[in-house]
Length: 97
Image (cartoon, rainbow, N blue to C red; front, side, top):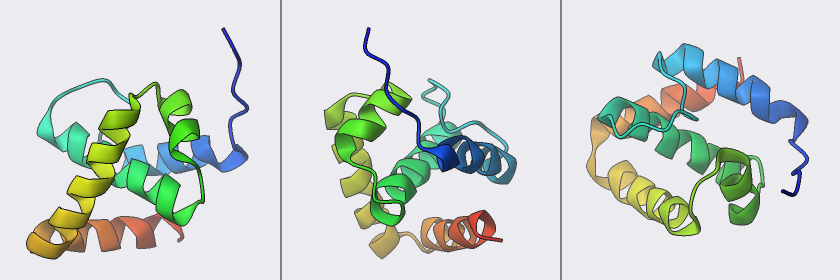
């Protein structure tokens, strides 16, 4: 088993995300609330923190295809779902305050 160095801020972002969503986005659950939180969390890590898909896959124990799905689905929801978009914008603000 290879050990992956965990970026220093990952745990901080995970804890703040859990506080914001009320669920841990790292949880293995198919509940919609958890999946939405995980989708936003993964998107934030890759697009705003510069983590690679491979690193996110290893750190969160996710399949590459699932991470790609989250990224694609996130873009669709940002364009088509005002509630999702507003939640994501609020989430990003919450992480940086």
